Picture 1 (cartoon, rainbow, N blue to C red):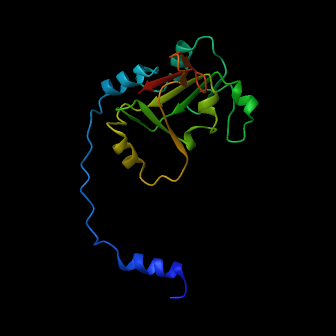
Picture 2 (cartoon, rainbow, N blue to C red):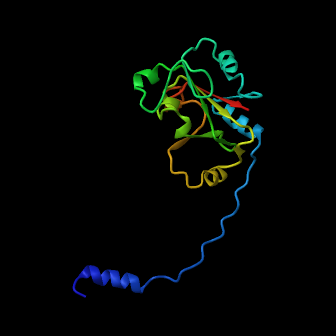
Picture 3 (cartoon, rainbow, N blue to C red):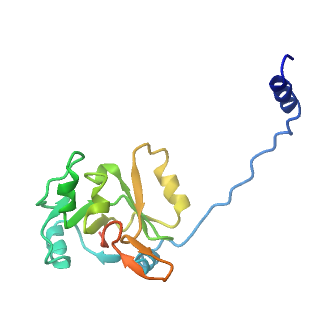
Length: 188
């Protein structure tokens, strides 16, 4: 052994503890009901609106946002065309983004939104109002089930929960400070 480094590494290698089996991880369960999802999401500032289907999505969105006109979506007629190369100035002018959520998580009111459903990575953050369409059968109880559902997804995506919000030490809550001013989930 020619140097201190080799001596230290040899001593570490010779003094390894016995391998032990990994502990059993308990199955995490929870309440995956629509009621739990709705209660949590509304508690953090979101809104849940049940709808029968997406055939009249444009009518529902118009009723919810009667004064907003600039819509970006692949689920309904859009007045703003958005893709991955859309300049930020165009994105900043979007009033409403209507996007397809993949699944929701009841314990924290989040919705998984993969990049493929975003039109542009910045759109869910820069739009004034974010509307996510979600199949009511696609709600899991906990984040443990959510990550298991994701599996080995390699693409970018985000879990969204409620509208953007921030608060300071004086407990002044500001909605829409760093992203969408509102989040509405249309449960199909």
